[in-house]
Length: 284
Image 1 (cartoon, rainbow, N blue to C red):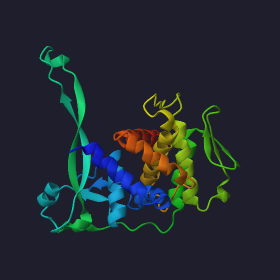
Image 2: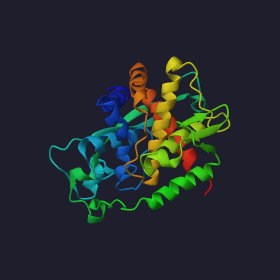
Image 3: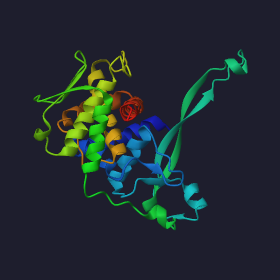
Image 4: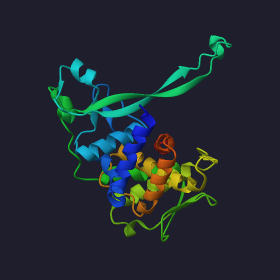
């Protein structure tokens, strides 16, 4: 079983459902928040966030809480007959076992290992507190305040009044239209977080460089990283109904990147997670 190919195919299928719908689903999946393990409370990361968001969108799950079959059973609950799990992945460190080297000198590498999750919507007999789905806030004002604070805490140079949204690496400046020109406040903040993700790639910060791996597709790949980072960030903020505008043109380029390199989505998700963590960890 080629785990990398299975996960990549799932993301490609999500994108291929249509550029506009696919674009909305990256952020639409944040409606119920960042996926978490219902038993431990720990958040999932990187590629698993994308996989679980995609599954939530496809199956219309209202909850972002997940359990393994064993965890559900240990809690006295039962996965309903006929329900299908979703495959996620973790990386295990494996030694190469070179007999010419001592144990301390052995080289190691990461090997992908699958694990399977069920949404709590697929499980009966869970404790009432787990089955309760928090209602979404009717007022987004506090969420927007948090997003605004993130922009302030970043200390990024942000200019307003431009015809489009972009990050100028030469000037190390984020350029945005005025807030009033966006169709909604969530869309403004989602766009701002997208450009802030580009800003994190500067050599003074995370120093993202793709070398020759992505060649002519490096620009599209960086756009994918920024898109995913924005989705991760607004997911952490609990912002709903935010879609990043005018990015659909990149979708076909993203698909090409993913088809050419089955590990590209893992790299993109990892870089996006680091960018989002950098943005969210700014001093408060």
